[in-house]
Structures are given as C-alpha cells and as structure tokens.
Amino acid sequence: MTNSKEKVVHIVHSIDTEGPLYESLTAPFERLEKHFGVLLTPSKENLAKIQRAEIDLGGKEKQIAKAFSPQLLDYIDNYGKLDRMLEHIGSKSFRNKMEDSYGGGWVYNWHCVDHIGYDVNPRKKDIGYQYL
Image (cartoon, rainbow, N blue to C red; front, side, top):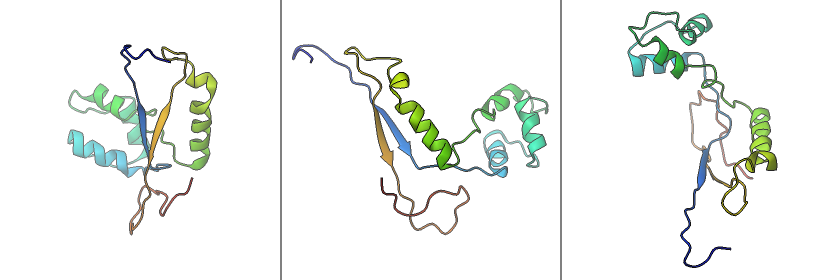
C-alpha cells in the first residue's frame, strides 16, 4: 500500500485488439508503393528479395527490408496463434519478468472491437458481435 504522500507513476499497457489479422500477399506491395513510391509485381520471390535487400530501391534497401521483415509480417492470423500468444503473455513467468515497485507483475488493459456491417472483408476479420 502506498503512503498518501508518496508519488506514484502508473503505467498502463492498453491493447487495442480486433482478433486475428490476415494479410494477402498483395498488401505489403500496396504499402511499398504508397509509402516508398516503389511499384513491384507482388510475388513471394520479390518479397523475399526485398527482405534480403537484393532489389535496387534507390538507396532505401535496408530501410525497406526492415519495414517488411519476416518478423513484422508474421501476423497472428488465426485463433490458435492468438490463444498461444495470450497463454504466453498471461503466464506468471512472463508477466513477472519486470515487476513494479510493489512486486506486482505486468497488467494489461484490453480494448476489443466488434466488426459489423462489412460487405468486403479482405483481412478476414471476425464479423459480428464477439462475446467473451
């Protein structure tokens, strides 16, 4: 318990979540054109070359390779992956790696969204009301 005169800084980790996220092969190439002005044919081969900085991108090869790294494109795209991630980050061993000043573990705050009224769903989001 804190002393009433003690100054405490509260840090809140608020997570905005929409469930699993799918991304088509064309989506990274759309971002590549939008953000870097580079137009390439979407293919697994071209994506791998971008990630290895093997395509001349006007001196931005390393920056673009980092932006499209396999780690950043490894989305949690199904409920199995989501469940494993939640089990991991909810475990005491993970949450207590960095304890607060009072010995407590990491605390999360979740913001969940329901997707309703969609006619087009390229990211394959769960549509409808989600009940937890």
